[in-house]
Amino acid sequence: MTEGITTTNNPGQRVPQLGKTTIADEVVAQLVEIATKEVQGVHGIAKQGIGEQITGLTQRLSGKWQSGQGIVVEVGEREVAIDLRIIADYGVKVPDLAINLRRSIIDRIELYLGLIVKEVNIQISGLFYPENKPADVGARRVE
Image (cartoon, rainbow, N blue to C red; front, top):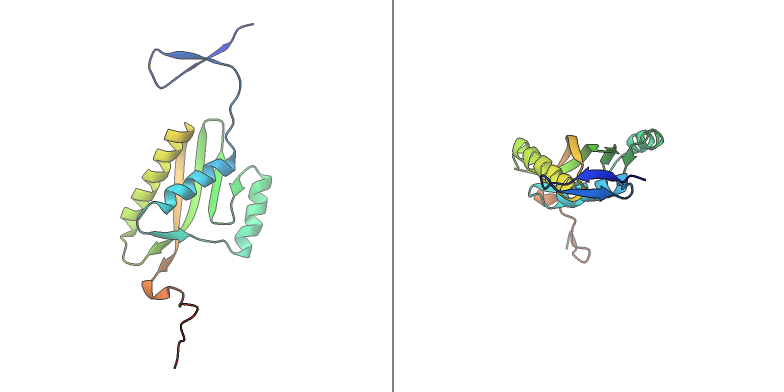
């Protein structure tokens, strides 16, 4: 019986392939969520409405994974495609935010999972204004 041989990131070094490794779509989505939270100017990941939830059910049946948080991933054997909906902080330059967010996500996926990122589609679904912060529960609005 012959073992399969897989190359590593180190040229010339080969290691035996003793089995198959698969990465769940949920793992990719979790990594996207972590990377997103660390980028300055992103207030949060946009939640989905009922229409997108129905679409998400269809996508799950077709092999894509969609969280309830606005992250849709499609993972192949070596490649991944990502759709992300976010709320941006008001005053942030959106093109710069998209570049930084896309770079953060791609770096993490490639570094930690070894997958090739084919695309990261980012939709800015809303803006967060600082005065939109929820009022203190104990504070009264009027005297």
